[in-house]
Image (cartoon, rainbow, N blue to C red; front, side, top):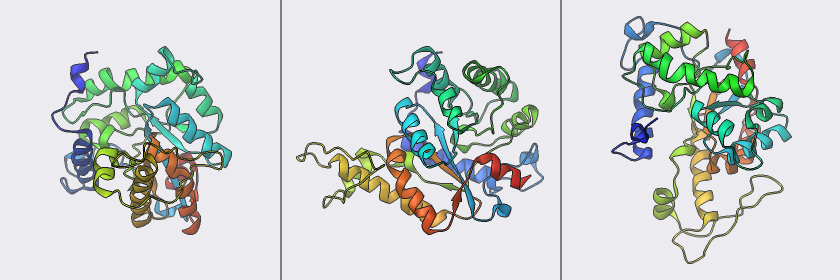
Length: 291
């Protein structure tokens, strides 16, 4: 497929913010009242009120095999099951040209007990796609990659459209394949925390030591640089944890991404959940409660 499909005139950060707003607006009814054009198909799941103190942690995209596996292992060590929503192309990349020590990544993730959902195939902005386009260019290729990696009978735990964009066609797609639409009740914004913007503008005094796990520490970079890696990580962690602390609610589906910042945030996130008396559970458990 031509790389020109992925060229945009604005930065990824700007696009994520804009797309995120419109996705939330569409999904929440800000732009369409219930019962109007967006009423087709099942309603997306964001928060399950009947879930008690349980929440579900989810991770999108999975472009980085390295951070995907490390994040999955951190949760597996703690007996926690997360939901992973890979873009289908990320699965194809792993099947065709995996990085060393990351072969058969998806069966390994499944064997850890983690659940895998569908994030369509190319991660394009699909706002103007017809239902048939979604089927031919996104859903069928994504399912094909999933079933090549995980077996012919594999069914994803849910469907999460890229950028959170919900259209009539996406709702119809969910209904056609009988796969629930899984959105999120809180966004950690880990994908919006970037070195160039956050660190250059916010670096000050050296940050306290940051640990992803007992066996890992943040490597120091050149101290003469405008911002060391340790400081950048701390700034992003502060932003992520502030987002979660403000918006987490019992029953929330939590949106993260398989990126470096999210990896360093795993242990602090779990400490936050413990302080708030919130229990991370598998997405399937939350969906069972929601019916």
